[in-house]
Image 1 (cartoon, one colour):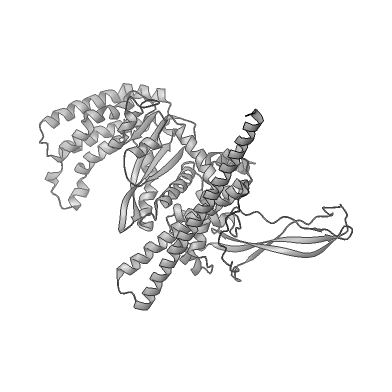
Image 2 (cartoon, helix red, strand yellow):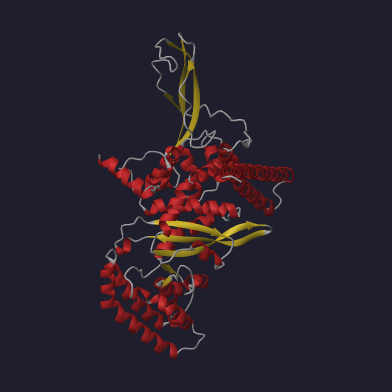
Length: 558
């Protein structure tokens, strides 16, 4: 076989592989659309049964809530798969996936219209003649939903109400007018191109898309509640319609999420933690996990922008953090969860991760025994409060006081201060705790708190900050990143599917990174959604929150 024949065969194999991938994407889109249709029919049947037989049981209402959430997740996944199928079909000759196209309802007449006329040409695009005559126009409607504008003189309490969407939003329809011209000389018809939409066949503007995804993932408002609220404001948007937009936006922002993940994993030190997430499963719910990895070098005077990445898993197995941090080596600030132990293995490739444990966790166990107010409220006698816990909290607080003074300084300055002040305090604390522990029963509550701190497996992790100025005393950065998720569980109750949990993790990463960099997540999302499709891959980094923030300040200064 000649070299040219081999090259030709290789090219043919590549074409066949691309066609197979396109066909697979199309099949996935068909399956997702079918699953969404089935879920929608099940929901409709359940609601018809409730209308026929009445609200006889709370179980029926709960079932409908579960079906609505399942439908939301399936509709969103179907939108993602449809876009992937279309993108794959564009690269090959395989027929594109025909996504079901429901009849588009006209926007409500009461909404204000903003007419935007595309600039008309002065000459024929074909022959250059100036003898052109207008013969009509085409109008494209785009729905936008904007937060109400609040001047800087408005009290902060009112601004917080607006952030929680308690003030009515501003709805409007942007009418893009494209005038159509005909040339008297060559009789050709010319017309400006159709307006750009971030989403294929889109009807929603960037601000509305940003509002939908931010309310779902940033304000923890499920789509069915959003649909109800929009309907009360005179804009009827169905659950499936909103789910389509969420799926399309998630797919649109995937490249930006990958850049943030690469930035986080390039750090020498990470904060890691996890929290429970109820996952809807057959017969009820199961406890899944949402993991967080935070890069924040500001406490040690670092200049790298802070960022956070979330990951979702069905359980809390140790293989999950091992997989998340595969190939990464550095300092991991986390709790004493045994699932991280595989990362600390000396035989690990490319090398063991350095463990740095959180003093806030250790202090909390003593503080719970020393919290007089809380114990009295629980009806406990002051005599039950441990004086050893009081003293332990007092000694640990002295370490925190030193850390507050060196916060923001360079690692060398932090290490020098710790060697000079903290080393002796930690040595005295260890000696005192061991003496007290020898006098306690193994069943004493304060003994368990002491054992957690002085355990041979843990003590080296707790004292690692004395040898490395880059290590923080606490893992509060990771805990702060999970605070919104913990609050949101009361609103969305559970994740509808594993794929929905992964989608939420990706959006939490984007929104959490924006918050860490001190910018409005919704405003940033609106701008990114509007620009990302026209931004070359080589310049995609300009849309990252920290670079976007810097550009915004430069514009304001100018």
